[in-house]
Image (tube, rainbow, N blue to C red; front, side):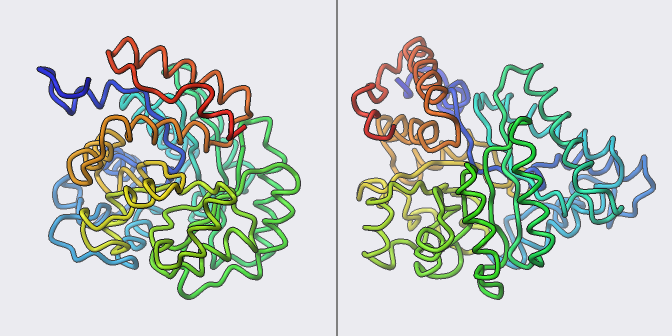
Length: 363
């Protein structure tokens, strides 16, 4: 059980975990930013860890704001300066996930964001990420796959290059395509044919939607873009028809508590819809989003769910199961991962885990 003499945090840290919504560009260590900047002569607002925090992380005295949250990433792009820097960032992102006992990670990244400051070729910068992340995965015993992120403000020609890159690197672990960025000012319609083609050719589709805009963006993501999963989707509760659509099509919501508060997607933790959506029968998962920017871990997110949302142990185990079943893994690998988690949870004296018969409806 979770509540015994060992601290709750340590109990949660020991749990095997799945993270299917984590951005590489939001996973940098502050110490690494400073070290790369010093090595490469990159000017920073400060080289003091505490003073620098305000520029690269959301801090407690800042008002929740989506544009402020996005602004942190513009500062981060300064350190994507060399092959060594990018590979270090990718390597450490996987190491940090493994330290948090994440066993399966779908790490998403935008090759344009990594390549832009130095004009690196998109294929080359992606190769650097694949190599470094895969090396860390092998060393740390964590399984890592990749999702390529397209942003809403991207021109169609560049987006097409990223779709092609994703399709050409499925043998390197690319399992999906993501759409992220400013929902308010950049509608997704110009990119619809690209996402439909990607899904037709076997890539999983995940769309950031219903984060700071209404439920209509979730509907658009599912019905027009063909989303298997929705990044965030907190505004889905605004429309009963959208809730019915999510349940009918078994669309998975990738929810991220801390970032949803920091972006202003929800006003406070207690009003976060994760638990309500779960109890309504929508498939929800719990993820970290941007652990470096948000100064969080997946352990922290689980603790918030247990303490702040009053999630039960059984509900948490079911949501962990959702993360496996909602992943872009092949069916056989999902079943094997479920078995592995079930064995380990029994060893941790947490016998509850959805039985095989309960998950077959997914497959």
